[in-house]
Length: 390
Image (cartoon, rainbow, N blue to C red; front, side, top):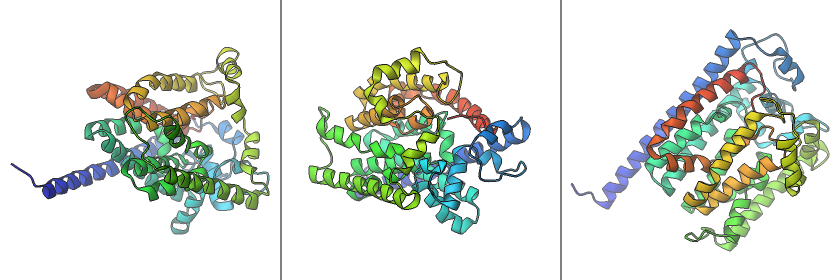
């Protein structure tokens, strides 16, 4: 049977519609499973009350309640910011404003910050999964897109996409940037460039892959942005940074209030570490008193870094150059800027790693999916009991 170009186009749109429909149901199913595991762990296993007491504690301070497994660690800060806002000298100033602002908007409808936070993370998790699939499908094909998404959603730390954390929003903006880049939709690039610096600290370096691709292009690819559009993109990016600094100045009395609040944490992240790689290596791998999993001494976190390094070489060979730079900027730089606290979560932003794995493993990708899902389940139980995960 011969199809006309119009019929082929309609068939392609129909197939894409059904693809996106099952992605929505898949993400909703994973979110329901994550929340279900949280509650199952909370109501059936010993809860770490001591862990909760040493952490910032704002929401549901009274007796144990059903919201506790949903409001551990950073979730408390986001709920606090959504309800109370920023102020001078607050620990929560270290968290960027876009995610709590969106929660506060949804709170006008829901009347409950926890439900609003889960709703926001759910919407952006669906958006992230959809954009990820569309992006890989456009660059490669349907099969690679499917298995890349399977690896992305089964990654042990992908549970944070479904919690009251900014991962889903940040990844949505990041993927929006690259979808705009590869599809030629410049308005999407400008929008993502403006909002990324308002979403997370990593948003402050999100433009580097575009610059690196312009300076060091791949042999077989050209920069898809003309230099005037690239400079305008950087202008929107700079505008987002200026808005962030202005808001922090207005709210906290200092444009650098967020960076000053970081000193109240044990993260030990600093841009100066990038200029002392030998000292960073010695401190992280030779003289460190290791633990299985601690804030800055975790063997688990460092194993994720080794996992990342394994995929760098094949990624350089298999990916468009801009996606390789994306891995370097958002996978390597955060690791070298500190002592691996929360590193597995930051590794989500180096999403091209999942594309490389899908291309390398071809039909054997399922070998990685099941053990990673098992780890994700264990980490979800851990989080539900309020132990430090990432």
